[in-house]
Length: 350
Image (cartoon, rainbow, N blue to C red; front, side, top):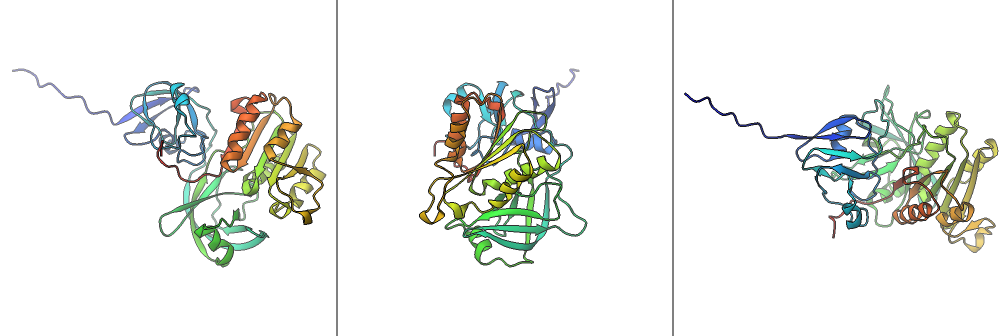
């Protein structure tokens, strides 16, 4: 009698190998980033929906389904070079990747309730929302990360945490009231203290590279100051004495909603310089400082950026233009860290 021939089991996962030698498994239908997060492998990411480009890396070998992403974030030319967005890409085969790893430690993403402890109006269209966690709870996170507020209709709103981990009595969010923005308008005009919210976090990898000793250029646009504030306060608290220059761009003086704070840092720390930049100062501002676009102010001051790191947070166009311009001045790709304020991606080509 002939022995029965066993059918090999269907492959239910794909193996991914990173430059460090770390390997992990990606389940069918799962993105590379989701699998890495699930297994505490630290890969860079920001929006997690194919819009910001923070998770971009190179496929050394293997094939992926690229998923839905914004075409400007991953061009056809980049795909031809082996690039992919790992927040969207799903493996078709085992993969070998060339992508920067982030040390995530033991930080876990959690879903927690919180109470609105205080609402401070910082400017005509910006409020600071201070959230208190339940008693005996603290959120472990890295300076520069963000949380997703979970709304009752199932939607999410992402906001960077403006406080550093050592100052975690509250979670501090800087929220600008966006015209037509249901949640931000609610926060600005209707939300009351003691309101209960739910959030998921910490999320994102816009964090200080503490293995480097390079001088730092920070570029903030509007409320992009929030995570940069957290990173700077962490660096000062940790006695990191790398030279730091903060460029904060806003439209007019009233949009520079916390100018006294970085001015105070500059007075107290000789290795930190603050340069506010206004694109459209009003006559009543009597502005004597720098004007124009914030990335151009940086270019005016730095002819060679090869020896620096840049941390940028703000509107997508500021990030994109700045990244290209700084690369032309010699900034290495791995020395540019960004958190782009983006919306959910439409499928590529749409």
